[in-house]
Image 1 (cartoon, rainbow, N blue to C red):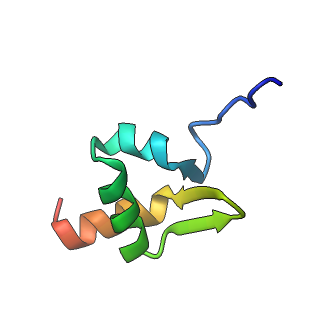
Image 2 (tube, helix red, strand yellow):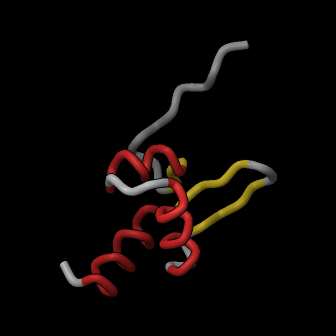
Length: 63
């Protein structure tokens, strides 16, 4: 079975994609996304609202 092509410009991104973008480990990405209320679970699939996560990081950790 062929894997679907992933769109890296989507509003909701995979945990692995966000890990690569912000250079943090999986547990830290999930922890931050949970704190930012940006974690979305659809069945077993986990997605992150990247806009919400990045806004939270900027606000809490001062960029």
